[in-house]
Length: 335
Ligand code: KG4
Ligand code: ZN
Image (cartoon, rainbow, N blue to C red; front, side):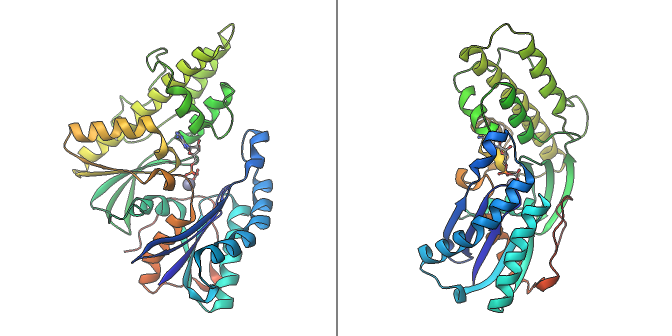
């Protein structure tokens, strides 16, 4: 079955065709660069841009994939968590298409799609496992007993890791989105230049907090007379190291507590070079197998939604025209 995946939960309009046998058949994304000038995503602007982009992206994807709409066997769409207006555009489009083609449509939890993006490299997920989901809106640890059965075992108390990257980049005038900019600047910086706080690492739980780090960086920057490029790179590297230290420490403790031998990364921040390097090294040191999505599938994309939808559709699920959107909430189990 060829599945169309639709992702519009935030600022990317991303569509893909996926089949369980063939993998990704075609994919196309329209990024919304318009938000750069605001230094963050403006929800109303995002939903209007999805309205403008969705049909042209769909038509271009169909023709570039050499398919016709009737070849679509089922449709999956991110229906939450995310920006309500953005989600509504994608879900309305998905329902209209499913109705006109007479095909099933399923809502996909955006975080489950990120988790399952680990299969887009061609390997089936190994369970039980611990998954670190790190994105612009989430920083959580899930125990995945099997595909479709998830338990939220750790969460952020305030900012998400991606939000911390974005806000720190803004303080350093590195542009938006901040994660890739910090990742790049940190390559020429010294991660030991400034000792930023590592919140909650002494606590015996799997929760996170990043708002103190953001404040510490702000106070440090305010105390400087000027901000030459080398200092920016040192601060970027030091802040990144603090974030990575926290993420790696909590993930490894969680894997040990739940006695799993597989650890997965997922979400936009999974693209971070230092996080991938440090988590891989720590897993190897402790005899745990490390897995991360292909770089291309870390940030929001339609392929991960199609891949997750294929599993739901295979169970015979069809949400029909009742499908609704939601703004928050953890992944729920469905097996
Ligand atoms: O998963 P995603 O595309 O959207 C959400 O679901 O939130 O994640 C976006 C987040 C942004 O905060 C962005 O700055 C961060 O992922 N990000 C990175 C990197 N690439 C994207 N953070 C650190 N290093 C990166 N290379
Ligand atoms: Zn995401």
